[in-house]
Length: 243
Image (cartoon, rainbow, N blue to C red; front, side, top):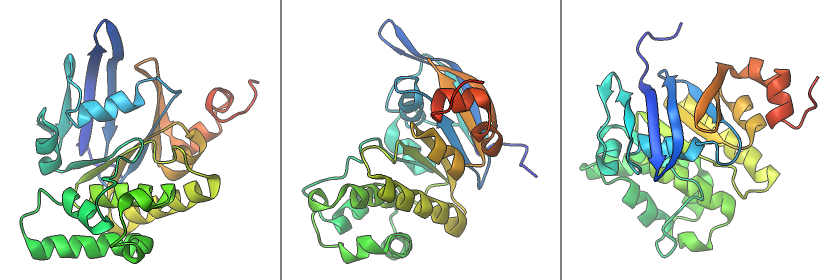
């Protein structure tokens, strides 16, 4: 049974880029331990929603709550409150080693022993990062950089992990590996995950619930398994034909 209070709640969120309204009153809820997906076409507002949650873009109106309390508007305070983002395009620190990248993600933690324990958890989830720990991030493969971006986000010990287009630019075999590892992150750590993803099929297969966003508005929500077999969703996002 779902909790009555979501761990993360977005209510009537409006974000403007100049005269363009990127989000038009979007709302969603994420409950503890869930994987929730937001799917939609390129430019629908998926990444804008993630950036607004993280305080990276200003909101014109609306609320973002963590455990019923308003999230701050500055990114570093959002991370300290318990929300971490693995950004679109990975954005690892290329001149730094894998270990140094992980240390950068641990800035909210003050206890060195706690930081080392968190690294062990990341290496347990992504053994390849342990093999590459002294390698510069810029020399890693795309898949390894994505693992590092997720690992860096996990270093802050978040209560909610945000994933922005983790499949972007990766080969299908690597996408399968990354999504399998995300299932482990959810199951092993009990991590609550909100993922926005243009690869709708993979996102719906990974998640328990999903929202569909079109031109800045949430137009549909439901169980992911049901949306996978919805004729409209199939036609619009899964390469199927309209019936």
